[in-house]
Length: 188
Image (cartoon, rainbow, N blue to C red):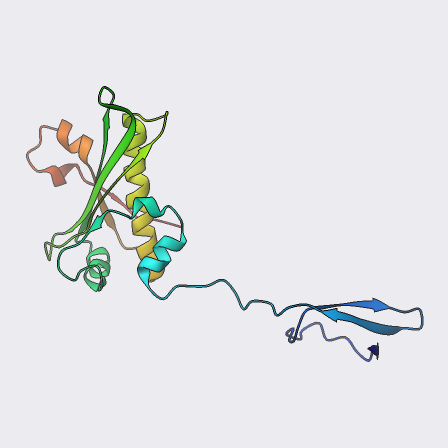
């Protein structure tokens, strides 16, 4: 097809199929074959669990446990985060003698208002397994879970989260483990 340039509109929104053109010395434009339709953008899941799995690392979410129907309706968890009644706890597990290549993780979120909360656990097999790696894997998982909830449910970043680090609680002489809780605001 042969076209002649009539005007240029730099503010126009592209429509149609992608194509290439060639300019002739006479100023005419030759339209070359068109390509396939462009996508409208990345797929955004409308289910939280699909959204979480779209981030990768499925092995971290294989062993999640919820009470009752809590996994289907996460409204209570979103409210726990926004009302600062969610306590996030994680612990890494490592036994050099029994499993020197395994780093295990256990974590939970506990809502102090409802008494509800999911728990999760997973393990990683690696020649680099150790106590520190196990603790970091737990922190990574719990922070990814919190961030996914924040982004999917559009939770304000100003909301506080109480993260409880098991090792610090165990080592303190204070009777109330929440005394050792550290408050953080997650930012993205």
